[in-house]
Length: 518
Image 1: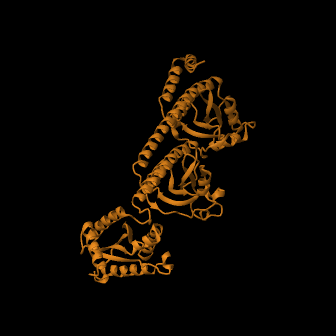
Image 2 (image 1 turned 180 degrees about the vertical axis):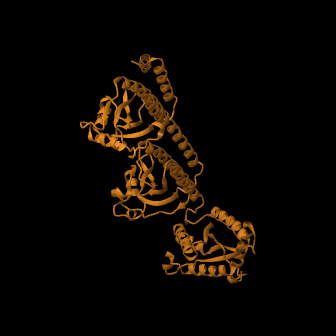
Image 3 (image 1 turned 90 degrees about the vertical axis):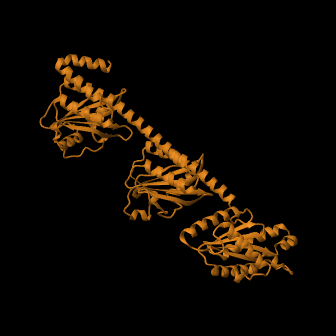
């Protein structure tokens, strides 16, 4: 018989008053759209319709074998259970298990010595004298449990009363199933929108730092109660730290060393998601300092892949132990797929940009990179009123090296010169190949007098450098001439500074100016 037919038959048997009340109860239940609201209204209507004290409506999680409360209603909301209504395993409550598996209602009375011990203890905790349990159906499957309690009196539920409750239960089941589907649909829509927003963020920039930030912000936004996210790059079977972001929006450094047998390497090598629901209980964190800390939460490691190739790993840590459901991992997996592609794109972009700014022979910055750095240094020095110095350097005797030993030796000499320059100046100084046998340098926040000392040091370093052809019986001489220009005394723009350094260079080369007199 259909639900409508069953309802019509029942209302006919109840008479006009009872039928109207039952129809009103069904309408009130069906009017709700949110899961908890449906369950709450159904529990309320059942209590009022049956004149009982309390009703609990719970979801049956078949896979976990547990019953989880959706909602409860107590007459007048003034009956308080001394025992919290927590999820429980049905295997510990035989009558509950029987009702759910056979779909047959059951009554339990606390003073019945034949009643199952588990249910009797639960009723004693509730201070209930009688209880009626019914299965909750939807789409011809059992989705939950209805428990009706009599607190103040013992009561035997008649068949007609049980049938009436079953009618309400059937409509509650249909409404709950609809509400669950609606919630899942809304969740999917929310997830898709979150992924769409993440995709827009990930494609907004090709700068690696911006990409990392967008990935981690999206991960933290999609992860309830998350604490922080870390990204590691995986290349040539080696992990290196990429970036870290805390839920409060603070950027950070790596929080611990990358262990060879730890979570991150396990994810990188396997290409699989690794979930740790509680770090204190997992073998990956055995004998680690984390076990001594106050943090007792969860962590998930996600491989960031292109096809089957792992290009990185993202770890998301949670303040408290978490259950990593299929839905939670699905949305994070979608983000990880996009993140892998974004990281590779950023890496390729950085590679192309580096190649465009790097001299292929020496590995030093090229003329384009020098022009960019010079403009940047002018802006910075103008703002903070700091001087800086540039060098223009020309090799003396390099043509004879090429003519005598060949271009491969000449190329090797240029590469060795680049190494010599980098070893001689500070890490903050900038060295570039300007073109041919000309090199340039930028010395931030440097006075001219100090720069002259550096120039002498460079000339001496080149004289002393062990070039391979110096072992010949008649080695050729190779030296450098340095032209110095200082901002702002020798020029306030790039063109004037380069021209001033160039003029100084040729005056030194022609003997018209000494290096320490520039």
